[in-house]
Image (cartoon, rainbow, N blue to C red; front, side, top):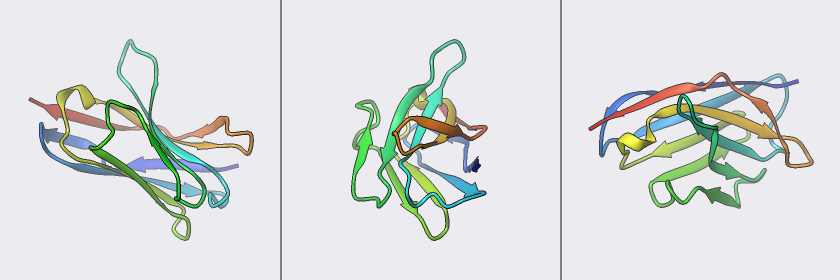
Length: 118
């Protein structure tokens, strides 16, 4: 079993930056794809970014491409999401997730709130 705890959310003005962190405990994350998702009340959770086990391959939603960067430190069992040029539409509850070996998103954190004011 693994526990994921997100941190780093907060209130920021449009154009600002935040870095989210996702700390894992319970077991290593080094063999697994990790990702970030976000959700706004009344809408479905949407994919933001993912990174493979080594960090050599990343994927981004079109809406954040060029502004957000996902990275990982397997030794620290932590995944990061650097968010730059934030927009009000980035306001959401951001979740960290870990995939299983079948690449299904299996484990989820509790989320950290990001609010971008205009």
